[in-house]
Length: 306
Ligand code: PLP
Ligand code: CA
Image 1 (cartoon, rainbow, N blue to C red):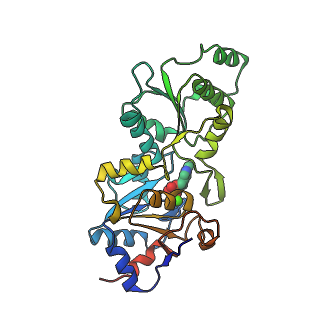
Image 2: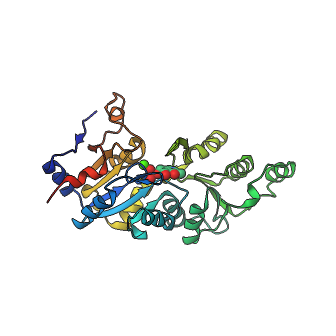
Image 3: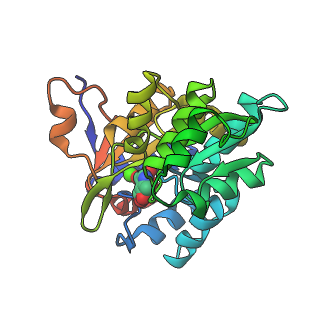
């Protein structure tokens, strides 16, 4: 494994780091905040980078929220943002479906396992969907459901894709419905593959753990659209026309953020120690993804003076 450069105290090293990049892609949870708790000095650090002419993009795997929801969350924490600066996995999934997958007419509906953030982004892209927050699926499965799922009469023949994100109401009826669509040849997509996500009370099952039963049932792997998927990187690049060599990914997780930056061929990756990963994780002998830089916390970048 290669080593990671520690950014701390030394203004010259921090200035050199900042000067290397025009664009900073920020993971959100674990970098800017934890749950609803904004880390100290974040607003000032983002202002500082923007005042130096840096482009800032927020890139999150949280699939439960739309970009509008994220903009509200950022604003509630005192961080101004433009909708266009936000890349969340629900949005990334919606644009992948509408602009890359391009489902044929008559097979263009999406069955959603997930929350309203996914529905809003699909609707904004003009993609028809079902499932999601439909209250009729938030119940126990019945004998009629078994019969009508098996013979297909409970299924919409126009569904050509199953999109699995974090669904706080996942149940046997929804999994059975998704399975029947997949068994009939629907495309299998996942917003992201995070096994867990951190909360103020510890780790809880993430979106990746919602798709695992479907992987087990079908033997298929989904196309995943969040970090580290390069489908997300390609759409960010397409949107901002960014120069990858002058772009840095900042994150707290090696197998999402840092992998995303390395495999995307970005000029740099910065791990901060305010979230999931610890220094020992990339110093381990079998570590696959080593950040080019690391800092104890994002606000340490602000120590740099022009
Ligand atoms: N998925 C869910 C449901 C989350 O709530 C979070 C964090 O809040 C994440 C994923 C990880 O988000 P990020 O990529 O911003 O760390
Ligand atoms: Ca994170």
